[in-house]
Length: 141
Image 1 (cartoon, one colour):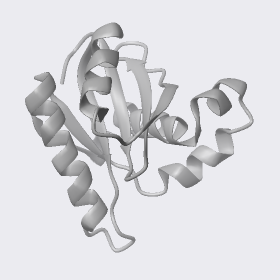
Image 2 (spheres, one colour; image 1 turned 180 degrees about the horizontal axis):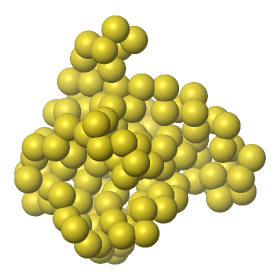
Image 3 (tube, one colour; image 1 turned 90 degrees about the vertical axis):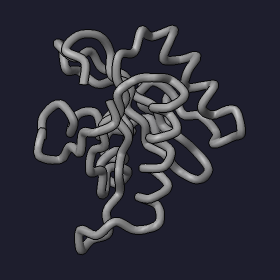
Image 4 (tube, one colour; image 1 turned 60 degrees about the vertical axis):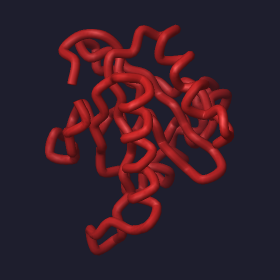
């Protein structure tokens, strides 16, 4: 993953996709926005990545409570591969189990409310990426 620039974290869901942004050096994730999962999703993310000068992507990878990967994790991994192919940016995956539950604790913040729960969950994913290297699965560079 890049050693400078911004990382865009993605909480991928069937209906909504949360985005968060953080600088590699400052390591302060902030919820950015929530997008509808639509046919233009990858193009929308590409536009945001260009505007925000993103140098890498982090996609949340949900695991079952027993640690195995289920159908949603496969969708997230597949989505990460598509992003890598279309945007040409390195993609890492971060274990994100219960990130939405944790995100709800931050929903008193005005910026978090504006960005939405999914964007706050994406910020939690990015926080894990920065603080818990053992939660990462790097590989699409």
